[in-house]
Length: 130
Image 1 (tube, rainbow, N blue to C red):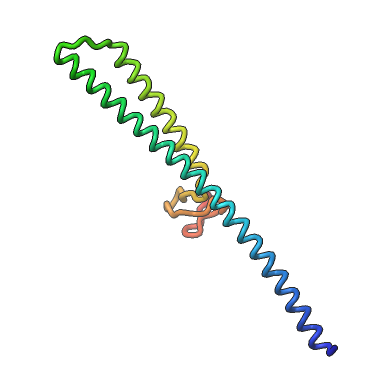
Image 2 (image 1 turned 120 degrees about the horizontal axis):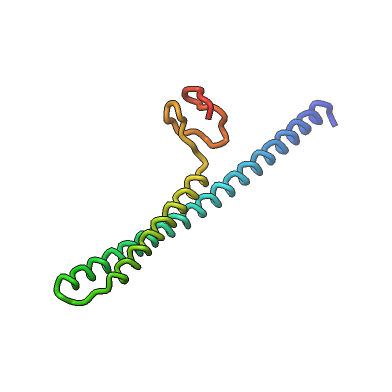
């Protein structure tokens, strides 16, 4: 086989290996991003459900207040229990939002407020340390 053909085949082989490695890395990144997205979506659904629960508790409290206005006997302990449930749900919502923020792959530059990748050490816009 001609030497030039051998060299060409070696270059093709090296290029193919490089392309395969790059494709593998891209697949890993895509898989990681998909997993992060699924996690954040689940957390968002939990926040939505908790907010729905809070709205229902608000309606129940409002009904109790109205019933007391009409002369019906309403236990203050019942209303207090619902208020405490709301407080607990708001605390859980805050925890979930904090978890979601930590899962995001981006951060904002403290200097210019540009969105940067979490792995960046410096802002690509202004050069400030992240």
